[in-house]
Amino acid sequence: MSRVFHRHLKASYPTAVAGDGPYLIDAAGKRYLDACGGAAVSCLGHSDPEVQAAISEQVKRMAYAHSSFFTSEPMEALADFLVDRAPQGIGSVYFVSGGSEAVEAALKMARQYFLEIGQTERTQVIARRQSYHGNTLGALATGGNAWRRRPFEPLLADTTHVSPCYAYRGQRADESAEAYGERLAVELEDTIERLGPRRVMAFVAEPVVGATLGAVPAVPGYFRRVREICDRHGILLILDEVMCGMGRTGRLFACEQEGVSPDLLTVAKGLGGGYQPIGATLASARIRDTIAEGTGFFQHGHTYIGHATACAAALAVQRA
Image (cartoon, rainbow, N blue to C red; front, side):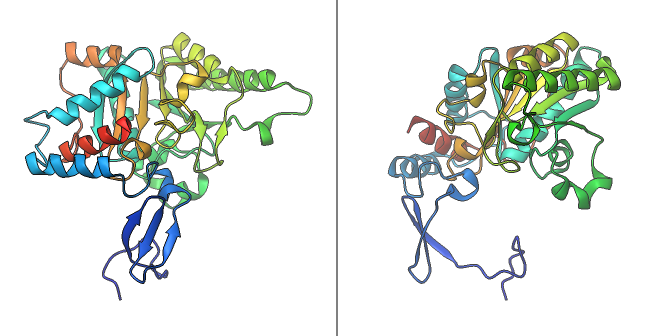
């Protein structure tokens, strides 16, 4: 019996021993076409030589340095690469080890931003039903998938969920796509008014919903209306591109095709292509400058944030 606490303890897993392009190979030599790239991760396949070389070279020089005391060349270079290509207003990047951590960091960064500007009453988060934002407690609370939430409901922070933008199920036969999007925008604004506009901290959404709806984009104009509503009430817009970002929609960031810029943007999966565990929270210059000019210290962190080898791998993936 394996001593690994596997994801499913009643399953029997083949042992993966090698990767060859889009294939994984088990100990018996059987080849598996990794058609979904793991969990939508392995966008370059499993044996890209340039990424392998970048990891090897970085490990030879320096595998890891704690970000409380040092920065590193690959972390700075990856941040420059992302910010140079990010939506307007994004000014800096906070590196983590995966998508759930990126969402946790975004939520805490949003809260600290409001503490820094003296709006301490802003604690409420609005997200959408049938969304998925990760499995750590803050991310799980934000997500709107009932099955994932149910066992841990007593541990979760209170989050308000509104309707997803899911035209296949939600759009009425007698309304246009634009009218459907406007109806959802009105629902969001009504929810903000009910909670109290000065109490709402952030609205969180995936530009393309992945894990819970299956590659579902919003109707035209929906996110522009959401951006307008958030701006009118001083609410931060957090867009979760952990699954749909990093080129998966044809642009590096999915929200570019929606014509909006978020205040906080989360990425992972395709950022490192599976070669190293990495995720990131991209923050607007306004949020970064507010904290920098206030306490100057983001009260959050993990041991492996900004891991030099992970950043070197991710930079090689992005250059490819």
